[in-house]
Image (cartoon, rainbow, N blue to C red; front, side):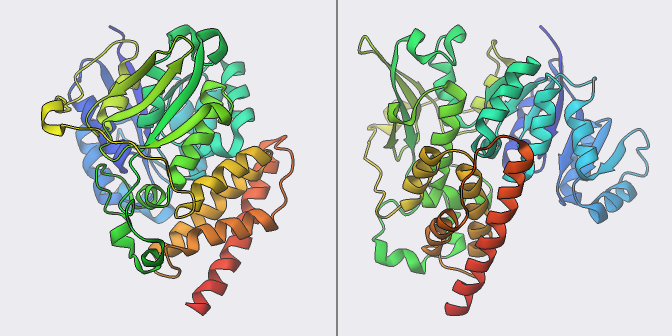
Length: 396
């Protein structure tokens, strides 16, 4: 049994906390070298006292100062800040495994740093691949990093493909990937009523406990659009061979169809500790603290086709991937701006796809030949999306 030494990027978010819960159950298997967060000082201080990492990183400067004060009686914990601190947490030679769980584009630099350092990277930050797919996967191949997917759907697919064929769908005999989606809290809501939904309603996911941004993405089905793009890069498969199935029970996390007619599915309770434990211990299996699946209690499983008229974000994501180049980075940037504005009450739920569509039309896609180009287009898209938000807020 190899003892793994972890950095948890985004330790105070839902994925980070679930990761630490699994770690807590296996102290002989895992040690925590670094924890990072944005600005949640109180939670971070509590985690540092429990896990005593060598490094604690706060992205926010004032938050880092406050954490230093709170941990003044633990001088062996170095408190760092900013991108330099995140990079050290991701690349330190003492670390062999990095949980990449910083939400959004903000997580790309540190995730990429971990990849370039050749770590085992547990990828919970789908935006890294959405923004920079080919460049990111090239970096994985060049560095020899071990990339394991943590999103429940991609981890399910990973579990359903032979270990030596993860990026060789034709050699594995794969004909389709069936990507499941819960449908979110507004699956049955009429389009006319969606303009009136509140941020709290959008964040009340029927099955999963997630952060507010990801919950809104689930409600718009943008999360599934981003996951479609992520799946194409992770498994080296074209979008024509990926079919989204709305599965409201969230018990089947995804399926893989083979040429002989077999369809392999990974089932489990909707609990992120399952894919996290799979990534942490792979290829072994460990207890994740997840309740056993009771199929008798569930009774029936249902499947529906996604409605891209009521949920156009899924269509926008597919179109951005087809356009290629920097279009997915523009899509992601516009979505982050639009969701933030919705959560602040500045725009309506139905304005989210409008902002994204307008930004994709206005910001021309170019070949994604370098990370500098990708970050430049990300910035350009955000500026345009902010202007869209301002206009819509005035009209609201």
